[in-house]
Image (tube, rainbow, N blue to C red; front, top):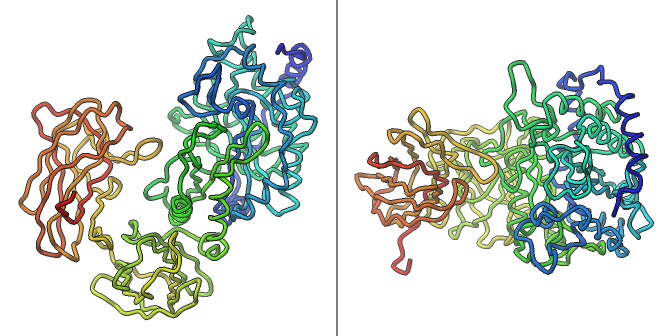
Length: 594
């Protein structure tokens, strides 16, 4: 496919470039109350649907009979497909089974409150009818505008319509750096003209599709995208729709210079849930696939279970964040059945437990609870703690670690069955029914008069007798070692000095013999020692192929017969030390079968 309107586009882009003047207002200067008012609906929502849909959906993860090893939406890049060949997808893309009302209904029934759909992914193809280029849905056999229909369906069913828009563009002749597989464009790119084109398409979307709740930018990591361009774009879209929310990927990934501010309204961890959130006052949203790819890939059947999806949602809410769960529709316009099935099951859980998620605040507990998670709400001087119990106690006794308040009331959410409470040595003890009402996650509602009074506690033994020592909860000692979060991490890293070490304090309710394992990642083999209660285990982390590729490593067994507080430490073996990353140490009750 040749760009039929390239001359027209060039003229329009040049006019936009000449007409555009940097926005006089800096919308990051709004007051805290103005910011809170703008973010309020999003903080209440907690759960949204991400939709990756484009020409790559028609390719379905295959090119010339070969399956891409990467994600479906990256097939042009991964297979280095020349633009002239990739354009053969355009006349094939005809999503006649697309039903906007059905898509929105699927999201709504799942308990989702907003939808974020790709108006343009990195392939540059617009999923709307743009007047600035023919590289859009208008050039396909499909005669409609799916984004207009989806926006209308969201308004009709009470969901907030949002857009993903890629800064990076593999197809546009003015985007730089130009890709090696561009076999069409010969003249040098002009990024100022591309910037004008980017703004031109965003103006089309922000003035022609009604209220847009969120602009979700991506593809900002190449060095042609600068701090000034990101700040300018943030202010540009806020000027068009002052109430819009913009994610942090509008800014650059480079380090900030003195006096610069990070633009964007919330953080966007991808495929990972930060172990402790980002702290008070920082909004964030984890985006995550339901299988292993964002765009449709017909060979990918590695689906997350409904239990994992529900518990991920709870985990995000318990740390003050949102959960944006992806679906990748087919080229025909159908959401895969496996996605629909899981969303329906999630929706049934949300229908019974929604009050524990929507508008809920982060857990007041400093660390993850050994049996699940906690969210909370406060009204009229009463704090309601929603205890999300993943591991229902076999003896019916659930300890809320360190909680010193007396309960105003306690009950099981679904059945409204009253729960007796009593103060215990390690916190408030709840006497639960013998069986969990929901295998996915059961909720106990605990009401307190006033704010929670919580004593700092060591890491507690899980209900199954195991102890998990997470990287985020380690005490780190030394000049280089530090905790890393995001992407493939959530680990202790930068372990460059063999004199640095880490330790954890935990408390055993029941002693015994334990099998010890670790999750490590390293480029070269690294020897280290674990010491606990006068016992030492030495191990060697294998080379795993990268500092983000973790493997389980069996370390041996230890005997901890006496309950109480225990400290476990990890030290490098100094002779020939090679850096390693450590994600967790786990102690499991010993079984001869293991």
